Length: 54
Image 1 (cartoon, rainbow, N blue to C red):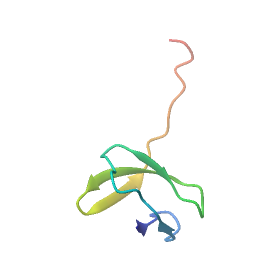
Image 2 (tube, one colour):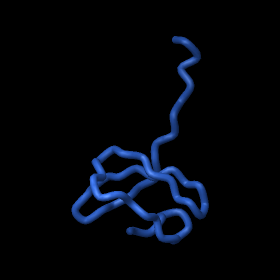
Image 3 (cartoon, one colour):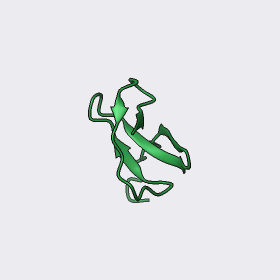
Image 4 (tube, rainbow, N blue to C red):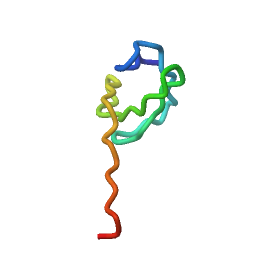
């Protein structure tokens, strides 16, 4: 378990986390990206941009 960087609530994580995985905060709904697994470090997930078919 670690803290959400947006709201500070506990975020429960599964055992086989991988760097780059996206997890959701169940309290505030923030999408968080796993940037390190030992120790677990989270950052805001990058926003997906529309490519509008280009």
